[in-house]
Image (spheres, rainbow, N blue to C red):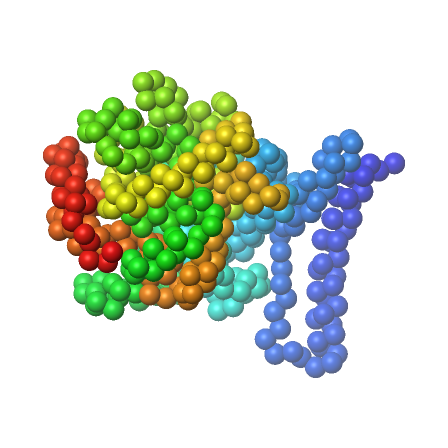
Length: 497
C-alpha cells in the first residue's frame, strides 16, 4: 500500500501529467468555437506542494521540478529549505522555493536548459531579475511563462533569496545551476544585492551590455531606464527630505511607547539610519561613565554604539573582545544577524564607517544634549522592560515589541517601525510621507542641525557615518574637532528651540 507521502507525490505527478491534456482541451475548444487571437497557455516546469516528510505524517513545503521530461524532488533546494525550518514560517519557505522553481523554469525556457559557463553565471542571474522586472509578454522565447512585470521590491526580495541560497551551496558536494558560482562571485553578487536600489540594479544589468547582446541579441533587449540628475538639487528637494525640527519635537512629546520615543530621539538627534538602529543590541547603549573608557573623554550623555552586526567583537564586555557577534548569536541563541536572514526579520546593513576599529563600531554624536537626556529617560524604561521580561534569555536586541501578543518581546521589524512612525505623525496631527515625514527624514533633520552648528563637510560625514569619506587616516583628529564643535553648539541656543 502507498504511504501518505507516496500518495501525495502520486497525486502531484498525476496533476502534472494532466496539465498538457488540459491545455490540449483549451486549444481544441478555441479551434471549435473560433480562434482566440493571441492565445498563450502558461507552462511551468516546477511545483511547490506541502507533502509528508516523515513517517509520522509531518508535512513540509517541497519543490518538484521537471528535468529531461521526468519529475522529481529538487534535493538541494529542499534540504536548504529544511535547514531554514527553525527560522522561517512554512508559508515563507514555500515562497522561497517558488523563487528557485521560477529560476529553474527560466533556465529551461530562456537558456534551453544548456549548461551555463562560469563566465555567464552572473549574466544568467541578472538576466532573470531583468525578466522578472519586465515580464515575459514581449519576449518571444519566454512568452509562455506568462510572468507579469513584478515590482522592484519583489524582485529585490527574490534576489536576496537567491543570494542566500547561493551562499548555502558554496561548500556543497553536489552541484546545480546556482552552486557553480565561485566564492568571489558570491561576494560580488551579495554586495550588489545588499546595496541595490532599482537604478543601481539595472546599472549592473547594463554593465555587461556587450556580453548581453552576444547572448540574447534582439530577443531580450537591454533594459532602458532614466539616469537621475543629481548635479543640482533644489531647496524644495532638500526641504521635502528633511523633517521640521519642531514637528520632530511634537512627534516625541506625543509618543507613549518608550521604545519608539527613544528611537525617534536617537534618529533625529544622533542620526543613525533605521537599519542601524534595528541592529542595536542591549549592550550598545552605555552610561556616560563608560564613555571615557572608549573615547578618552568625560561624557555628559549616554554613549551609543553602532556596531557591525556580524564582525564586531564587542558583545557586552569592553575589557574582553572575544567572539564576533555572528559567532556569539549562533553559540548562545542559535540565531543569525538580522542582515543574514530574510522575511520580516531581515534588516539591511550599509557598512557605515567605523570610528573605533578595535570595537568594529562607530559612535553616535548627539546634536542636542537636552534631547540626549530625554533619550536616557526613555532608555531607563526600555531597560526596565527587558529586565522584567527576561528578553536577553532569547536574544540580545534592544528594540522589541512591548505590546502583548504573538510577537511580544521579539525584535521590531522594519515594517513595524514605518507603521509606528505613521501612527506617531497622525497622533501629532501631521500627514505622513510629505515634507520629510518619514523615518529617514529624522536623519536629515540631524544633518540640518550639524550644518547649523557650522561643522565641516568631513566632520558631518564622520557624524553621519558616511562610507564615502575620502580617508580614514584623520578620524582621530577630526573626531576631536567634531566633539569640540558640538560642545560649543550645545552651549548656545539653537534657532529652532
